[in-house]
Image 1: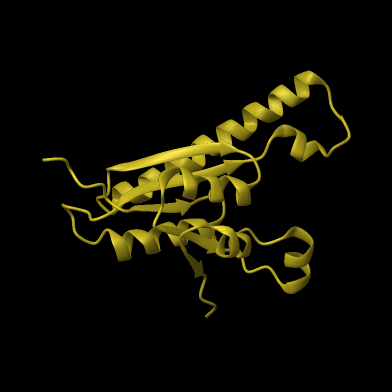
Image 2: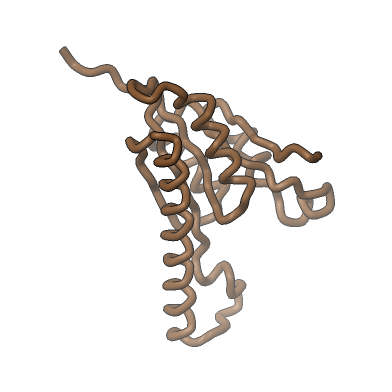
Length: 158
């Protein structure tokens, strides 16, 4: 008898406190049981390309671009390890991770389609209207364009 596929929950992480709060929320709400989890957990992290940090003008030597790319990959590895440590602290060890280069909005929506995700859980940085208008909101974009349920975890203000 074939094993039934578990529904997939994606959790978006970056270096922000907000993303790790979202991960903890997902673990506390969907992975409560210590044993037989009903969902497959995939943690997704998007890293920008060195060109996106340098702007469209080709600024910087090829050596500088290599160093920047290496730093971005090291930062991604630290972020993923922190996410895995949080999962482990909540007794969730069956977790997959995925690091992709590109705009987080596109990376997350592509991951939803690729994994046929049921739910995307992500944090909200809480930008004001002006910053959000200038920088765009990844969570807003995913809520409107992602082909699954999107849960946006906001940090509570005390």
